[in-house]
Image (cartoon, rainbow, N blue to C red; front, side, top):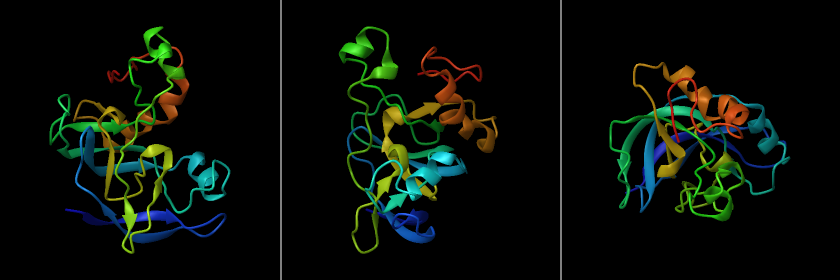
Length: 181
């Protein structure tokens, strides 16, 4: 069953963004459905809107987010409905040459959800950095979810998924707020 929710979409290069009804599918194998509680605005979202990252419009913007897992797909054993998570853009495989050498920042096989989120007319959306969190709900690969203390304010925790992670990822797999990968 698809969930009809509101999301912020960039339809084309330089076009004004708009709030659209989008359809988010139930999670398939290895995926998680997350109810977004907070999403920061990152300069990367502007780059997507301007076509500076690629031309796979329309984009579902937003990636610096925190929320609560609503459902998980088959094979997901490390998350459960109700878990408070931050969303991150580097769901590493753990088994490629770089991961096995302790260099996950160079992973050759990062993961994103395999099912598309769409506009109501069926047009597939490209979620920013594989997340698309400027929406009431989003579908991500379970490896893009990092559990954090549910007492952390969502608007603060969400910053870990991009701003902080971008600064610490190359050197550490544990951040000072207690989130681990």
